[in-house]
Image 1: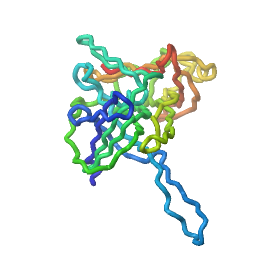
Image 2: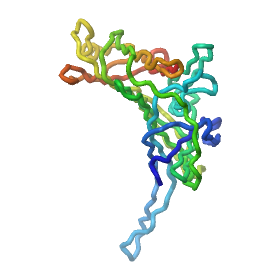
Image 3: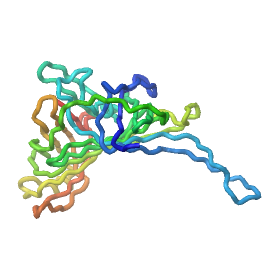
Image 4: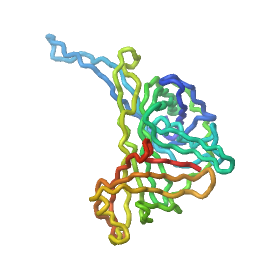
Length: 314
């Protein structure tokens, strides 16, 4: 099998664990670096005492499957609507984000922010050059990496109840034709200060629960997101205290607004990220080509409830 002949489809479930049958024409997601692994696999030993010193065959007791991959941050290239969204929209929703679509003519946008109730799930079809895994009831975690001059990426780790693999031909997917904008031309600010940074990264850090269920075919109940801890880092050039007191703000626990500004200049293919209540967890010295920088680790908390971060595609 060829590693480069792999396709991933994803579709939101109307009921948890019920396959909505994603199709290649509307549900394909362009991914990079896909991989899979077993989650919670149970292999039961049988420590019987016998005349032989040999071991008895272990008994398989069920497993979930995790699929990990990266996705480019980009828009669809055409006006947002109930059916036209960023390719990663389904996966964001299955990672604990709520979705708001604004269809105001000429200024359509799609916005994603965390939710704590009515969390959604998705089904993933993962094709590997002639075989297919079907993962239902998928939920997971996502992190983001914005490095200056590079293509912005989101990294997903999705876990679901697995069927397969079975022999199924790889479909011909339809992807968004838009090319992702590079991470340049934004207006990054922290604490209303225009810091000069080289990279911003953050992780939703969703805590996942895989409870047992005797009635389930794989022995696992509904996969749940039980907590999140949004955290990340960025690397500003160090400044005089009078300009921006990074270290002082860490020590006092100051709550600050972080904003990337709009990245991308083409309508329906640009995005921005906002965090209304960021605080520093640690700061340390850095060096960027002979320029003194800081390595600032931060946490993002709620300001008005379920608003640690907002991602707006416009």
